[in-house]
Length: 333
Image 1 (cartoon, rainbow, N blue to C red):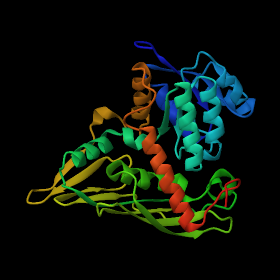
Image 2 (cartoon, rainbow, N blue to C red):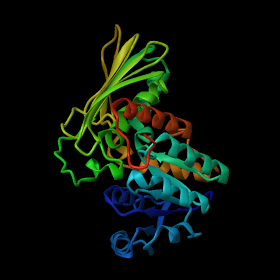
Image 3 (cartoon, rainbow, N blue to C red):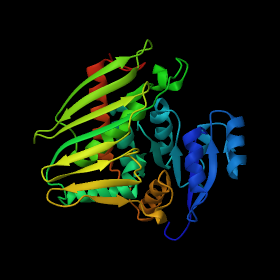
């Protein structure tokens, strides 16, 4: 599809779907051609809002739409396995919101399905595509702070969220870990890979989901990481990476940073700031651009958000949930 617009389908009509679609319609090489929901009314309203020509009241119709090059799956994560699986079996390429699935087993099933069908599949971990995060990754890989010894990252919202909210609903994969904790875990594993050992503690709700969770991750080489997430307290949402020869501090919004500070032993601190040409710091365009670049190149996965990395993150999330005793309906207990 070199040189032509990439035609997108949108599955679901919630807040994140609207945010992503708003960015897509401003991209000259993207075209949103269809949207699907579980019923016609929200699909039609979404289509009218964004000028989308086709609105479907079921997922199957979108899956069978041959004019769609790639589908963005933005349903609740409890439905990711079913929604993305349907699209992949029907020959569609897929960008699936994070957390990728409820658990590593479901994630492995989707990856296997994509590879069997030769379809593109990527987790919508937009942090990995963000120019500033990529800059941090490059500095660490180049040895700017020496060997990484520790990472800290947190993400918490003040709430309070009522028991009826999706973040408190076990049937929707509720809790702080999957919705928010996926960011600090993914950030840590971007720099250190999959941990060798996981310990964790959590405060659970009456419904059985985690209100806040803290985990200590460790690696055979001696590195440690502390990650924290919460839906009962607004945290600094910051991160730091300490190495044998320096440190990188990332203030509020570590997964879409506006700036960060590099401290190197024996040298003055260096502040890095976002390039205004990259657009708003919370833009999802970098993620969309990476999907379209990969599709035009004939790639079935992105080197920025590799599927093996997504699977590794899901295994860590599973391990944390196992330690704190959170299980969702239908999972083996």
